[in-house]
Amino acid sequence: MRRFGQMLAAGLLLILMTGCWDIDRLVNKTIVNGVGVDAAEDGGMRGTISTIKLLNKGGGQFEAQDVVVEATGGSISELASRLNNVMPGKIEGSKTHIIIFGEQMAKKGVMAPLEYFYRNPKTNLNSSFLISEGQASAILNSTKMDTGSPIAFNILQLIEGSKQATISPHQTLFSLWQTSQEEVSDSVIPIINLQADGELAVENVGLMNGDRYSGVKLSAEQSMVLMLMMNRLEKAAVLNVGTESISRPLTFVARKQNNDMSVSIDKASRKVECKLNVRLSGEITSFPITKEGKADPEALKIEVESWLEKQAEDVVAKLRQANSDALGIGRKVKQSDFAFWKETDWKSIYRDVKISVKFDVRTTSTGALY
Image (cartoon, rainbow, N blue to C red; front, side, top):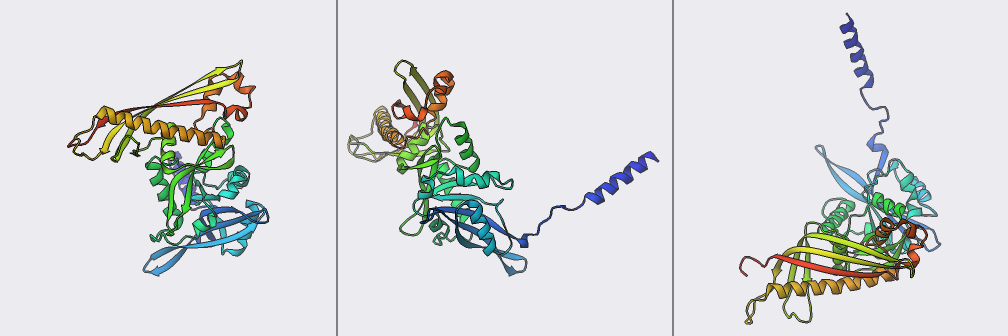
């Protein structure tokens, strides 16, 4: 009898718990998958959202179509309210995949505008964050990249491709917030641009100084070298080496890496020195043979190291220009001497930090024939 009572109680609970108590029909929502924020001429903001409209094609088949809407306001909260007023259904931002700040907006600071997203419990903290050359609205309104998928999904593929090529990191709302809270390094943000032919590209990075975009961008080659200096090698880094001593194209593909960073602090002069050793292993995949015969692998290794170190010098110069501690030297200083860190305004002395970068390249292969 007792067992029968337990089974009856369990059956009643299953009946009562069936279904969702907070169900909200999809037709009553506007699904936002991309957000763009630009600086408006009046000092406010111009917001652009890319939403998905499902078109019924019959037979249970639907087609996803982008609908882009813009509004202006003084804050993200005001933009959301105004956009809600012109869109059918309640705006649902939990499916937002990308957030793009125009470069002028990013130069004013990103964390204050993003506060709206961080306070919203439904925000997708894995949303990718980018900075656009020019207006973010132009990126979301781009129609050249027509793959049959919403533009936010296309941009996600560009981000992933850039990350896998070791050109840019995958910067998300969460990683951006985490870096800002730690205050021991600066973020590196993927740059998306609308090219002259109308195509979109993510092929370099921009440097942050605190929560403000410094306006300093790296080239594609410099972006890749910075990722290697940050120990961010993904599947591979294809380095097209060009030096005055080599008349032929040389391509080195880095497959593995191991970095070592050390800092020394002179408390009397308050000078900091950072030494970064980057060890790479990979193969030479292109170096045409001429009448002069085969090249010496050791000589090619030295050429690759020399080229990388020259690129690293240029990267360090841009880090100083931007006052951006993308390498996380501040974190190393804090770990090494917390008392010095606590009494020091790190940003005020960062530009004077001596940064030495040494590359050690090991070639595991020069190809099947050579």
